[in-house]
Structure formats: structure tokens, C-alpha cells
Length: 399
Image (cartoon, rainbow, N blue to C red):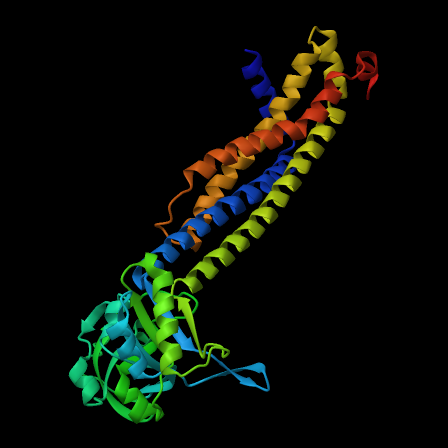
């Protein structure tokens, strides 16, 4: 009965000052909504990164040229040390590397009718699509015969397909790539952005890119697929041993190439997203603190305004516990109602901002209620104690 009576009086008190109560609730709701949004966004990002890692393969190493040096100082310019022969020999001799895919990538301009699109052109071999787990949306991939014949055929990334063809069928379309005519034979499904946009590129046979488009005989990278992801050290040893020998590097010379796990970049993005989420959570925590101070302020004002009421209740037999409990219930009610508004608002905002399929963080919703109840209780503790220990005679004479 004491609890129900306290709730009834608390609701009457909140209704007596609707604007003041509403502003306090908004402060709590914004903090809780921000927490839920950050948690949901973090989980969606984590799921996307995990999916991207699985599509890339954690058993793929990226070999790129090293940096040139001028008078002992490293410059930003890369060296042209990697060749197709390096990739062939690596795949043939290494026990840990099962496939080595040569690639050359450079800037490109694609034209279709009156549409122009600046993109990246990647020359490679058919093994590239298998190593990167690429999937076709339409058409087919080029084969070894196209590579041998330096064929002018192109496979489009999803972004390029949409920009040039929209919803039209791209198969058989004649496009200009760096002013040379190519026939579109296929298009890939979207993979989503990571540290760059893998969908914003055009794939052509490696010989076509090197000889017809860019006029080079070296590579920009080699994709080395390991037998399994646990053999990184063995694969790295094989790569360094072979490339240092074929590049005729002395023992005192640095490597003229770099080796990175292909999932290294996404791991860095994952760490960055985690740091950003932590930063936003700190901001949300500050917002909750401000909301708690708002509750404390409202309760202090309520105690002052109801001093005479407190004196009358004490003179009629209410003890200090009843008064303390009454004001704690009011403060906790403010926190809980603010939490409910924050949860509803956060879930609605997530649905609009992130997407209708966004999973709700039920655990954090429960935490939100506990946090709000705790904030309300702690914020109302001092005002409630002040009310409970108020001098009865002073309270009765208070105007």
C-alpha cells in the first residue's frame, strides 16, 4: 500500500509541473537513445566487417612494392620490383602459398554513350575472382585465353555498372576505358565499402592492362593465397626468401616489397570504429549525467515547494522513512519514464537511420532501465534525505 500510494502522489506531482518534468525526461531520454544507437550501430558495423573478412578470406596476403630511397631517406614513391614471373615462381615453389595472383591497377576513365565515370582499372588473371570470393551478378568472367590474346573485355564492379548502365543490362555493352573500346562480358555483385570501395573498379585481363592501357611490364601487387590462415609465418618466410633471391638483394639491403594480410586493413577499421563508439558512449554518459543533475534539481525544487506539505504529513504521523521513500519514488519514476522514452526513441531512430532490419540490443535495453532507475534513485537521494530530516515546526510555518 505504501508503494502504490507513493506512486500515486509521485504521478500527481509530475502532472502538477508538466513542462519541468518533460524537460527532465528529455535529458534522460537523449542519453539512453544515444547509447542504444551507438550499440546498435557498432553491432551492425561489426557484422558487416565480419562478413567482409569472410568474403576476402583471412588466408590472403597482399604483396606490394616497397618504397624507393633517396640518399638513404625513404620517399613516398614505390619501386617497380614485382613481376609476373615472381607470382608464377611463388605459386610453383612455395609449400604454404597455393595461389599467387598478379595484378596491376591504375586510374581509369570509363565512358558509355554520354556518361563518364572516373574509376580504377585492375588488370589481373581469372584466379583473382576466386581468391577474393567475387560473385557474378550477370554474365561471365574472362579466362586464360582472353589473357593470352590481350582481349578487350571487361568485368564491371557493381558501382561502375550502376553508374554507366543504371538498371539496364550491361552485357555486350561497348564502353571506352581510357579511350579504348571494350566489351562488357560480366558484372560482379556488390561487396560493400571497406578501406576503399572494391565495387568501384573495372577488371580486365592483365596483359590488356599492361600492354594496351598502361604500357608497363611490372605489377602493382600480388595476392598470395595461403593453404590456411595459420601458416602466415611459413608463407612470409617463403615470400621473403624467394623475392629477395629473384630480386638479387644483398643481406644488408632492405626488402623492396611489403607483405600484409589482406584482413589487416579491415582490422584497423574495426579498431577505429571501436574507438569512435567508445568516444560516443562517453558523450552519452555525460548526457545521462546531465539528466541526473536535472532530476536532482527538480527534486530539490519539489522539496522546497512542498515544505509545508512535508510538515503536515510528519505532524499527522508519517515518519522519516515515509518521506524519504516518497521522494525517492518520484526521482526513480522520472528516471524510468525517461528511460522508456529513450528506448522507444532510440529504437525508432535506429529503424529510420540504420534500417528496418536492425537488431534490437535487448541486453542494453535492460541495462538502460537499470541505469535510469539508478540515476533517478541516486539523484533523488539528497533531496529526499533533506525532506525527511526537515524540521517539522519550521516546515509547518513555511509559506
